[in-house]
Image (cartoon, rainbow, N blue to C red; front, side, top):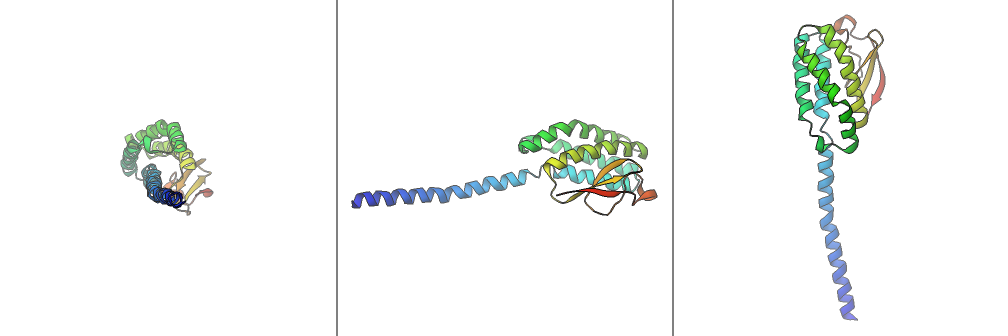
Amino acid sequence: MKKSIATIVTVITLFTANIIQANPIKTATLSTEIADSNQLQPVYDAYFTVKDALIKSDSKLTSAKAKDLLTAISAVKMDKLKTSEHTAWMKVIKKLTADAKSISATTTDLKKQRETFKSLSKNTYDLIKVTKSAQVVYKQYCPMADADWLSKEKAVKNPYYGSSMLTCGNVVETIK
């Protein structure tokens, strides 16, 4: 009887020790997954710098920021994305790349950059809806340009018209 109780106590002790050791491993895996879920944040941040350059109506700065966006796009490690993020990424990567290349190649034609920015904004929106950003993002709309864009600020600053119609538009969606 004493041997069976001792055996049961030993089994329970070993089982408990294994559970305690297993928990840190699960925590480490979880924190790695959280860190990897931010793979797309540099792409979003670069998009916002392109938008800000368009607000300033600076075609050369916009071109430079679009090159930074291309760098951020090419730096994404697809194997680190969650399944839903990977699926969304695969749907838009070619369009995002083509739009960023087009904007970066156009160093003097602000009108063409803004036209291409419409497509860039649509594809970034499609991606951010699935993957989420680290911060709240506002989808804004300009009726004059009949186009949307994304912003980290709720206050409207229109990238399609810059200072000539800076506050034209409104927030149509809040993405959390």
